[in-house]
Amino acid sequence: MAAKRDYYEVLGVSKSSSIDEIKQQYRKLALKFHPDRNKSSDAGEHFKEISEAYAVLSDPQKKQIYDQHGHAGVDDRFTSEDIFQGARGAGFDSIFESIFGRGGGFGFTQQRGSDILYETTVTLEDVLHGKKIEIDLQKQIQCDVCNGSGCKPGTNKKTCTTCNGQGQVRQSRNMGFASFVTAAPCPTCRGQGFSIETPCSECKGQGRKKGTKKVSFEIPPGIDSGDYTVPEEGNEIPDGSNGDLIVRIRVQPHSKFTRDGKDIFYDQDVSMVDAALGSEITVPTLEGTEKIKVDSGSQPNTIIKLKGKGVPHINYRGRGDQYVRIVVNIPKKLNKHQKNLLDEFKKSSE
Image 1 (cartoon, rainbow, N blue to C red):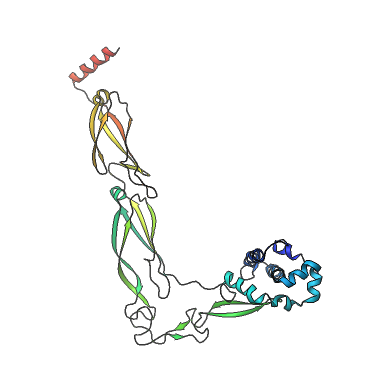
Image 2 (image 1 turned 30 degrees about the vertical axis):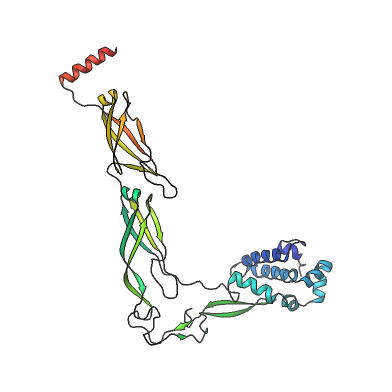
C-alpha cells in the first residue's frame, strides 16, 4: 500500500494557514476532483485524499494530533468513520451545499424562456438623435385564462408524491470513506415538482400561449450596427424568467455622408477657380447646412473640419466632427474664350 502523502501537501496549504484558508483551498480542489464533474479514472482517489486531509486539518483536535504525530497518530486514534464524523456537520455540508447546491448535488437552475431576434434598420439621423421603437411582438405570453398556472380555472396543481414537490430526487453515493448525496431531476414530474390533472383548455396546461405584446425600447444616440439586448422581453415561461429580446440593428448607408465611428465625412465639389481664388460655400450637415470658407490656393483633397458636427459616441459624452474634403472640379470642355484666358494665365505664370 502506497504511503499517505502529507495532508498539508495534499491541500497545498501550510501549518500556519487559517481554517478559512484551508476551507477555501478544499473548496477549490473539491470542485476540480468531484467524480460527478471530473470523469478521469483517478478522480475518485484524488477526491478521497483531499477530503480526508480536509477532515483532519479542519478539526482542531485531529489537526493537533496530526501536527505532533503525523499519520500514525491519527490512524492509531481514529477510524475512517471517526475522521469524517466531525466534518459532516458544519464542515462538508456547508461546503458541498455552496459548491454543488443543496444536498451535495449540482442543483437546478430556474427555467428561462427563449430569446427572440428582431431586426431593424436606422438612419444616420437616428444615430444622431436616438429613436424610440414600438413594435407588436409575436411571442409566448402568460396564459390569461389560468394566469400561468396551466390548470383549468377552479382547479390546482397536485404536488408530486415522488419528489414531494422538490422537482428532484436524491441518491446517496458511498465513496468508501463517506456518503455524499447527489440530486437529479424527478422522473415522474420531469423536475416540475407537480402534476396537472385538469389542464387549462386555452394553453393545454403549458401556462403560456402564442400572443402579441406591444414592446417599446429606446435606440440610444451613437448606436452602431450590431446586436443589442432588451432584457426580459423574449418568450415568457411560467414560474421562470423571461428570455431576452435581441435587437439586430443595421445603420443604413447615407446618400451624402460616410461614417467612421463618431466622425462623418463629406465630399464637396469646388470649381478650380473658387479653389484658386478662394470662396465661401454652403455644405450640408446632419442638422441642416453650414457655411465654410475655402481659402485661396486650396489644393485637391484639402480637408476642412467642422467641430462637433459628427455623431455621438455611445459610451462617451460629446460628438465627433464632420470632415469636408475639397474635390476640385476640372472642366472637361472649355470654350474659346476660356481657353484664351487660361493661355494668358499660363504665359503670365512663366
